[in-house]
Image (cartoon, rainbow, N blue to C red; front, side, top):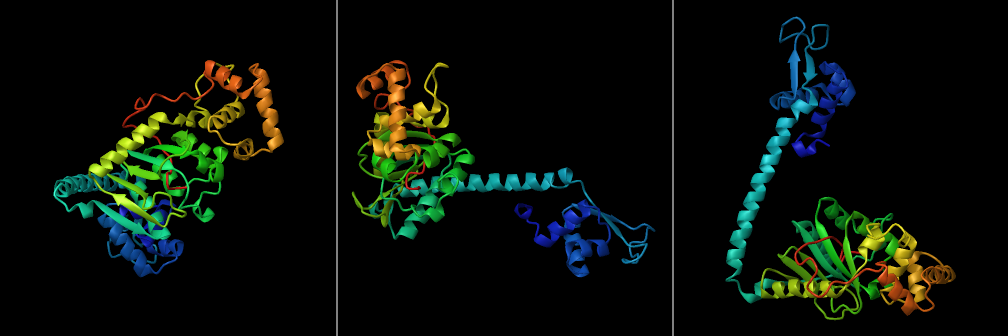
Length: 364
């Protein structure tokens, strides 16, 4: 755990042995399982870092290292010892970040005069596309935006978290505070995603998700700096993509996403338990069923999304209709909307124009 402070494994073992009560070289050698020479080298390094102090019981710095007069070593209290190292490392990271920002400014200035052919690059091969997807997400400073629809480069089950169904990179970035917004195409919902698993797990972490039918393309955008779209308009498999760097084309893609976002239907609040409303509103099961009904998927697909049988789905649907006094699905929609039970799509362009919440557009 201390590798981030440039302590090697032996130094960590020696320091932790000191914390546990070992004081002499012989005791440290036995506790760490390394030679006395390596223990002394580690102690010398730790002393230079002001993590360890030593004393000789008889006052003789050349006391016999193996007997009663052997030198004793004591650790500096961890909360004191490592604070200065942590502060130094944080300052180093801040300096590095400022330098990267300076380089980015120089890069943008240079980009204005670049050859148009340098503003886009082609990524070929499924493995290369997956690496680019991960790299793009890790490069985000504030926001990931995406359109999620088939085909999927990351559909390999071995790359998915078995508990949540999410891509590990997406979960990592969300926990670091990166916001995601994603538009899920109904085709992807019908063939790949599970409301209660991957999309539900992302919603629990704060994803702002919406759903839309017939989205025109897949897309992944990190901040306003870089985008990734398929090379072909309707690929059978995601074997090649185009990386778009800062340019007029990137600006168009960002605005294009915002237009679609304004037209898509919100679903994340119904999946995460953040649904507003009166105490007598829909149960979590009913809220998910209503959210699914807005997608236009078939009953069989909606039942599979909920992880229930078709018969159970029909029973829940009819129970909800009876509760709201509806005899048709149209009436159910009207009455649920009048009660504020359905997600309301804002007018185009009225969504949070440059804010984010998450989702793994190419990801799952």
